[in-house]
Length: 197
Image 1 (cartoon, rainbow, N blue to C red):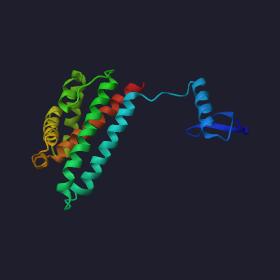
Image 2: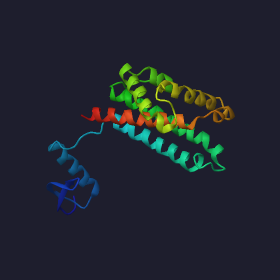
Image 3: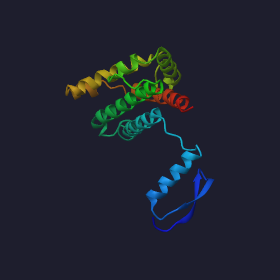
Image 4: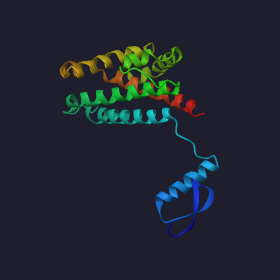
């Protein structure tokens, strides 16, 4: 049990309480979690939030590849196309799964088109509307369908699975992929916020 010392429990800089702690960080963590639970201040992170955060990680990697290698028109742009596509597609897949989880659906399809098509009509309409709002930022027309953004990404992933990388990277429209990621991130952020309530 070690020596006991008074410690202060804070959340975002606000003092919650003082407690008799120890010099063992693991024991202190357990004590603090129990105190937060008793005071009903410990919230469980939503599953949709976790999936959303993982999607964001893949999106950040895709964006970094895009900015450093593709947008800069560097010599490595051709080599960067496949890593960009894979990270972007994984982010979109997880963003779509975020929408499923936020809606209470924990069983979902695997391909991007299947994930999209199995969403509720209202979620599909929200994705279409958001894509229209963001389209001009990515050089696209406002009347673009979100599903139309996913079709070439799904095809490119299928080519990668078949080890046809040349066909895959030759027809990648980077702006449309960025629009798909951007659209997903915005719609999912709202869904996760609603889910947390």
